[in-house]
Image (cartoon, rainbow, N blue to C red; front, top):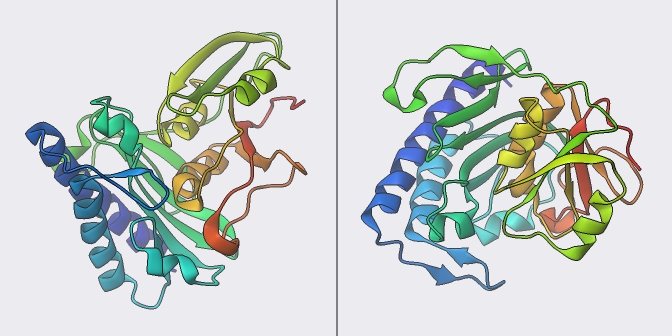
Length: 263
């Protein structure tokens, strides 16, 4: 894989998809429907998916592609592949909250090596560079030219005063019970894969997820967090989360800064 080319393509497609999503968001005509699992899908999800999928297939025709909105792509047995959630946080989108993102990732031999997370309503873009480092592009990434970038690095956590970020739409008692194991100074809610990015940027220390997620929900944020010095570990055995699992479903996991003492 040419990682410099991959980074350019992922950035371009994420920005184009973000613009398409915001066009729908501002129009108010979301055309919301329910999928087979009762999760929502909108006109923006489908428009972003079509745009990203076409671009990735054109640029990387020999790399398998898995995307949330194309059920046929979920039947593959792959270890090296591209994976897309064209609009992560659809519930936040429908509720007119800004915590939704475009997620594109590249997985190699089961590990998320490269990723981009773009939150168009927040104007925040997080990605891995060609060399595997993690950065946030500052300024307005939607205005064309590549802006200044700041390196991302997880914070050195204070075990007596951890900062926890948890799901805005999927908070439950099991999550609260897990968080209660720690000495917590602050708990904030965020939607979509932004939770990974807040840990990557040193704005939070711990993100537990004791609920259903799919690999397209996590791969891009996972790649960025690992590149920033963080960890994403299964709760059942403490091993790093891997990708290309049957059905692309994740177990419960915890994402954290490297120095967090997990309990």
